[in-house]
Amino acid sequence: MFNALVMEKDEESGLASASVQQLSQDALPHGEVTVAVEYSTVNYKDGLCMSPKGGGLVRAYPHVPGIDYAGTVEVSSDDRYKPGDKVVLTGWRVGEAHWGGYSQKANALADWLVPLPDGLDARQAMAVGTAGFTAMLAVMALEDHGLTPDHGPVLVTGAAGGVGSVATAILGHLGYEVAAVTGRPETGEYLKALGAATIVPRADLNETSKRPLEAETWAGCVDAVGGAMLARVLGQMKYGGSVAAVGLAGGAALPATVIPFLLRGVNLLGIDSVMQPYDNRVRAWKRIATDLPMEKLEAMIHPAALSDLPQLGADILQGQVKGRVVVDVN
Ligand code: NDP
Image (cartoon, rainbow, N blue to C red; front, top):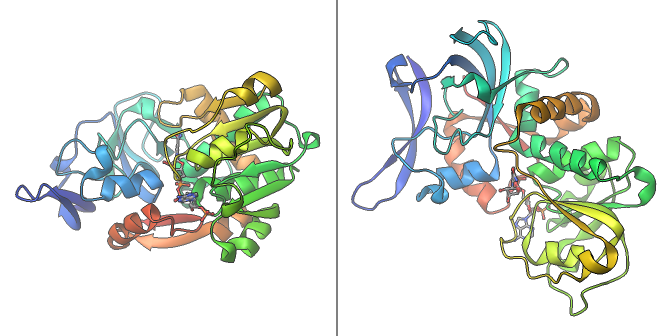
């Protein structure tokens, strides 16, 4: 028997709610690798999956959410994994369309797993989670498009959130001058400790400008917010600069013009963590182990248990989670 957070739908109201339940091994869906989960986490998408309508992501109930997990292989029918191996899983619609990580046991396809890199344990991997993994993908994409610290300041939007906190810490560690955008002024000291050089109030950027181009200010940007803020930032990029578009915490619409692309050669780089190919996953996790200072990761962590998850899901949708939640499922 093991514990899991199970979402069940009330047929009358059509709304789902969560409870911690004891399940037996035969409740697990088919998989090639059985993982004894040690830690999971809470991303924005987990908030959506735990919401009463499943955020449009969950298709079938009962459902175990949790888009990320890390733990130890118990049983494997695939040659790539053997009992005792430490693994991490993010993406592949796990926790949305498939059984997720808010459980002491999970079955996965071997293709979905990545061996934990040297230097990271399961708890640290979940402090990173999809949010931090995506932040690393975003930094790698900016670098692949030529960004180096001598090009000038790099903007991070939604900075006090999960993606933003990890992006700030990685960029700061790599020697970039980080400007952190936040709507929570009380997080200023936290962001500076992570590596931000300056704090930009959200109100400075969350409205569209009448002018398609403003002063050339940012050499790069990791954008977790989207919407009007992304449109505004595009017009403030330096010539040839790149924006890694990661999220939509501020909206999915993009009320922008093409002028920054045409007159300043600005690049808008899409970042997807869910279907990311294996080789780039391994590359990103190795970079996380080397380029994300562990003491900064520790400063982001809020510990939690399975029973805390429904509240944390609601909190993250309200933009009220600072840094990264680490869920000890045991
Ligand atoms: P968090 O909630 O932890 O962070 C989002 C942050 O955005 C908040 O903390 C807040 O930062 C800021 N924010 C919230 N609402 C608004 C608003 N209305 N206007 C402006 N800023 C706002 O979420 P995550 O870091 O987990 O995820 C961030 C985004 O990235 C989400 O949209 C998520 O879906 C997306 N994402 C995408 C992935 C991909 O593969 N492309 C993978 C992972 C996440 P502050 O308080 O500092 O202003």
